[in-house]
Length: 354
Image (cartoon, rainbow, N blue to C red; front, side, top):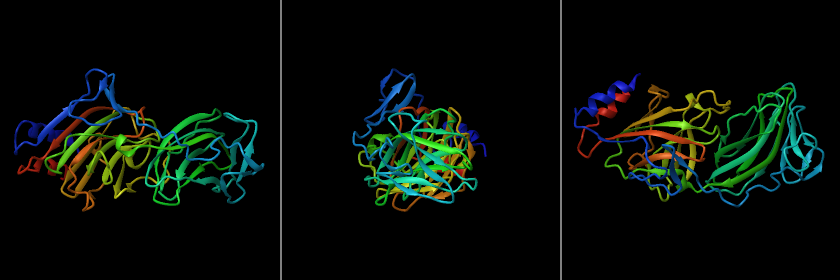
C-alpha cells in the first residue's frame, strides 16, 4: 500500500484537517528547540541526535574476562555447555589485558555460553563489547527479558559493538553467545554493561489534543544493535512508565521492531528471535505509525510491515509522542505528524487501515 497518496488531499484542507507539524531539523547546531523537549538531545549538521548519559556504575564483575579458575572456567561467570562445544581461556588472540573468552563451537552448532546476573530492574542497559570470529556470528542477550543484540560477524579482527537491551524485574543474566557458528570459534573480550536513564531516551512533542495520529521520521544513521525510532502512547516524558516504541535496531521484523512498556515492564510485540546482522536497514529509512483508537499499523518506507496491532487499553489514550534513541550515533531527519483535533475527523488516519 502506497501511503504517500493520502498526504496531499488532507494537507490541502479536506475532511476537517488534522493538526499538522513537520520538522526537518535544518537549523543551527545545539538545542533542538521548536517545541521539542529532551534533556540530552541536540541538533548537529541538520539532524537530531541523542547523547544519553551512561551510568558510571559497571554492572559486570570482570567484564574484561581476566579471572579464571582454570583454562575452561571463568571465576565470576557461569558456564552453560552443550554438545562438544567448549568455553576456553584465550591467551593469544586478545583485545586487551591477558585473556579473552574463546567459544569453540562443535559441528552441530551446540549452544555453549557464559552468563552473569546483573542488578538492573526494568532498565535500559547499554552493552559495549569486542568480538572476533573465524566464521559464524556472536551476540549478547539478557536472558529473562528476551532481548538480544543482532548477530555480528566481524571476522579475524576484534571489532567493538554496542547494543541496548531491556532488563526485566528479576533474573537478568547477560549472556555472551554464538549464533550460526558450527565448527567455528567466537572470541569475546572487554565487555561492559551500564544502565541508561529512561527519560533521557525520549525527545517529546507537546501533548497531543487526541490520541489519533500519523507520525513518521527518517532514521538517517543507525548504530546496529541500538534502538532508534518513534515513541508513542506515552504517559509522561519526565517519568516514562507506559509507552510503545517502533524502532530500527539493525535487525528485526522487516527492519522495524515494536515493543511496549506497561508499568515499567518491557514486552516485545513484533521482533525476530534470532536476528541477523543489519541487512534490512538503509540510511534514511522511514518509520511511519498510524494510530486510530486502539488500532495500530506500522509502515517502513510507505510499505505496510505488520498486520493491525491492538494497543493496550491502559495506554491507548496516552497523549505524548516523539523520538526514541539509545545512542548518539543514531540521527533523525524529517519528522512529520498529523493529529486529529478534538471534535475533528479521523479519516486521514483511517486511510492507512484500508
